[in-house]
Image 1 (cartoon, rainbow, N blue to C red):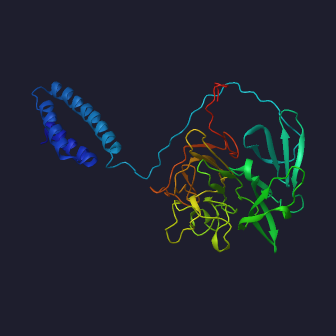
Image 2: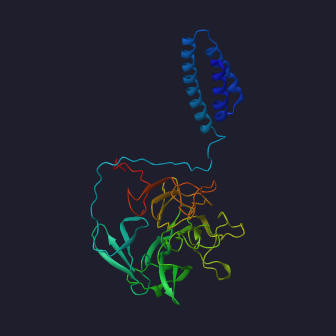
Image 3: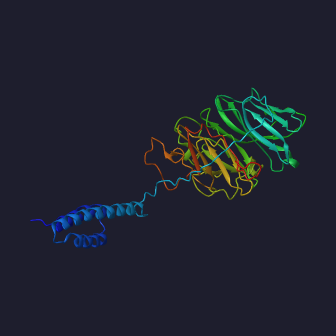
Length: 379
């Protein structure tokens, strides 16, 4: 006939061992249960049994929590979510210029914050004097570039030596032979000339675009005086050609080059400290990869850190803090989340975004800057 202490022992050994399988805990708790269960009086035994079961449940809960939370059993592939929470109070805005058609980019003239250039998707570059509010047409590529869907005049960057060399660079989509191409073109600034495509001094880079969306667009010189270029995956749902993870294409990449004429007729030079210069299979111009559409990016003027706004597909928009040679996950995942066609996709070699937001909070992420000023306490 079973005694109460036998029931305690079986209950403990079967269930606790099944969940914890830790011999030293088993022995310790068995002793505790024996002390509680080995009593003379039935009422006392009943009370002790109830206490025994209660104690077991407490210990079991603690044991399971500790085991599941331990580094030995934790899912190391689960991405770390570094979610930025912001509290924004009332922030106003004022109009400084208007009357533009589908503006795609705004850049300020080096050394002159009262002069800015605004790009229109269909091909116009318009200078605005913020003091006088006068607008001046500086270039007009209307009819010379492709403007379907997301294509058009997409980006501009002034040379770091603009005040002495008068160079600026633009990113446009053109059609040649029935195909669409991204072109990075170099121009020389001329005060009294409305420039056309044919006034370009030279073409720096050319890339075929398989679709009319996810073309990227941003051009920017970093604190290192290198030109950074963002290209999207080339378009199509779910990155059908897997360009984001393909090291043999510029699509889905952030590039870093020196746009200076080089030996043997090359239009630019690849910096020796680019991460994949000596990696077979990788194009040496690549600085980082795994992007869907890095439409806009910017540098923190204090630290030099590079932030990319990568446009999401269906559910999540993300902000990436760029590391040299980093893989930011597309088309394996979107933000922190695996694509539905890639369940259980998370890999240790992918770099997490520093922030994401869902389509319930906002639509396509456009870009932004690190603000360290004191004029607005809400920024």
